[in-house]
Length: 144
Image 1 (cartoon, helix red, strand yellow):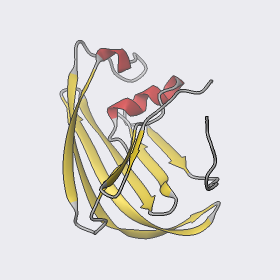
Image 2: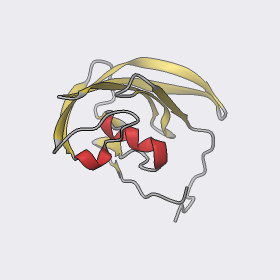
Image 3: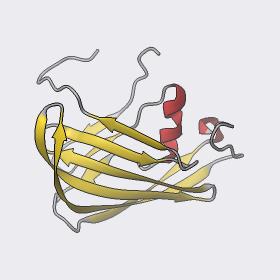
């Protein structure tokens, strides 16, 4: 599939990732992006908005004319220990929704302060599900 670059912001205030944008993963553009904001505490809530152009549409799931505005809501709802390929990892659970004139999507994200986003469970605009999980971790690895 080739390497499709994405973006990440990671600092003391928040961690935010632009999702993969290759092949079928283009559908993730309509979902909440993986995002956690300090303080990392249950009950912390925040919002965000983004304009999304029609080039991200696809007849396999949804098309539209012009831009849509996704309105996102996020909340840290709990902590869970996930069983992963790397062992048991304690994670914050972030529940998020995206709403626009073409519909709604959601993301349940699991975040660990050392490993970052460990699991992403998306519900897409067409009702399909996409699940991504961390399977490998290396400190200081250069990905370019």
